[in-house]
Amino acid sequence: MATHAPSSPVSPDCLVANLAALWAVDPALAAAVESLEAARPYPVERARSGDATLAMNTTDGRRVQLHSRYQPAEEARRLVDAASPDGKAVVCVHGMGLGYHLREAAGRVSREAIMIVFEPDLLMLRTAFEQSDFSDLLLGGRVIFFWRAEKGTLFNRLMPHCALFSVGLAVVRHSPSIELHPDFHREAQALLRDFIEFARTSLNTLVINGRKTAENVARNLGWYVSNPGIGRLEGVWRGRPAVIVSAGPSLRKNAHLLRGMEDRVGIIAVQTTLKPLLDMGIEPHFVTSLDFH
Image (tube, rainbow, N blue to C red; front, side, top):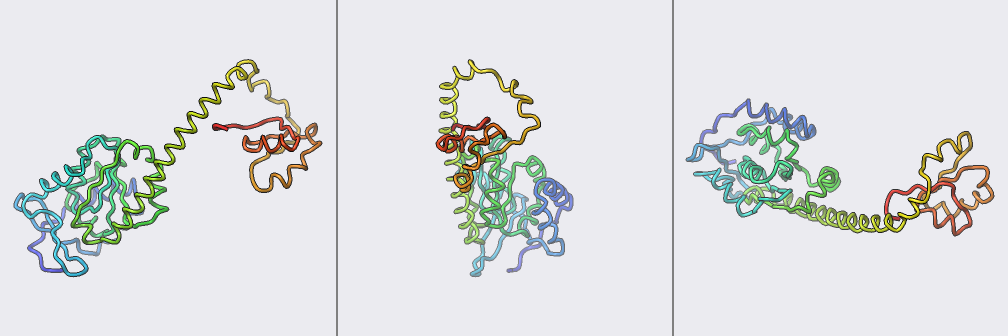
C-alpha cells in the first residue's frame, strides 16, 4: 500500500451503531466484520469538501481513487443519476467504497425497495462503517450484503424479495471497486442474472397458474354450490385406519395393494395421484387439492 496523507479520525460511535444494527439483521457478516478489530482500517483522507475519500492499489500496482478528492458526495449523486433508480424496487450496488452512492441511492427509492450490495472486502466495509452511520438503512432490513459469490446464499436471501424484481431493477456500478475485485464482481453479476431469470420465470408461472386456477374454480362453481360443505365429513372415519397416497415412483408399484380395501380403510389421495388411481380402478375417499390441477 502506498503512503497516504494523514488519516481522518475513526468514529467509534458510527462503528458501534453500524455493528449493532448489523448484528440484528445479518449476524454472520457482523461477526466477520467485528473479527477485524485488530486490523487497521484503510487510511482515508479528507477531500476538499471535508468528506472522507480513499485511494487503493490494484493487484497489478495501479493506483485507484475510490472517491473524488474534491466532492465525493456530488460524484456519488452523478453515479446514481446514471443508474436511474427512481421508482425501482431493487437497487444493486457493485462495490461499497465508503458508501456515498449507497446512501444516495437509498434516498431515491421507496422504503419498500431493497438494496443489494456486492463487496468482498470486509475491511472496506469496516472502514466505511467507521466513517458514516448507516444504521438506519441496516435496521430497516433494506440493505442485503453479499461478500462471497455463492449461488445458494444469494438465492436463499433474495427469494423472499422475488416479486420486487418485476417492479424494476437499477444497477449502480462503482467502477473503482470493480477494478479492485474484477473477478468477484463478474461472478456476482452472473449470479444475479441467474436469479433474475429465475424470478421472472417464477412470476410468469404464478400468473399462468393463477389464471388456470381461476378458470377451474369458475367451471366447478356449480358443483361447489350443489354439494354440502366439508363439515359433514367430520368424524365419519373416526377410529378407522387411513392410507395417504402421495405421488412418487413407487405409486404404480404399490397401488394395487389398495384394491378391495376401500371398505376397510380410508384412502386419502393427493391431487396428482387421483387420475392414476382412477385408471387403476381405485376410487379414493378423499382428495386434497391446493393448486390448479
